[in-house]
Length: 197
Image (tube, rainbow, N blue to C red; front, side, top):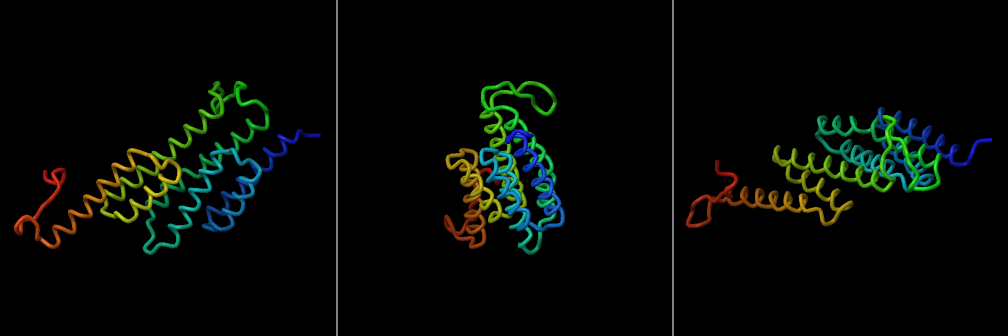
């Protein structure tokens, strides 16, 4: 007879493996339903939460016209690693009852208690979303960049880098409006200092 923790791990592993198949064929609503079941079984697993956010993002992207294939491919490239980490985290949770117990990472070395791992995963997710937002700014797609910043604010409402980028976007949007009208300061075109190079 298997311990209850072990059966939870096996169930989550099979759910997330099946979820990957739906993601590959772009059946995002089915994938989200499976992720919801996995999240219900292991609600503290931050990787399952990250996977859910990434699949929701893929679902939103699939509805946009024209589709941003580069962005979709970047997100899809992270899915396998997130699933692997989610399954690994469930296996660790099934093997120990205490958060302070020594654990092994994927390479066999010991890692810090679970809360450090979750904080690290959240930081990585925030950095990734911020990179996507910065890429949208470079391309001039300010609406998508602001949507990415809203995703950051859901996780970390006081994120300083996101607020600074939002100010930069607002400045760029306002600079574009001023340049289009050409009427400011006696008819001269005004541009922010960092745009003049």
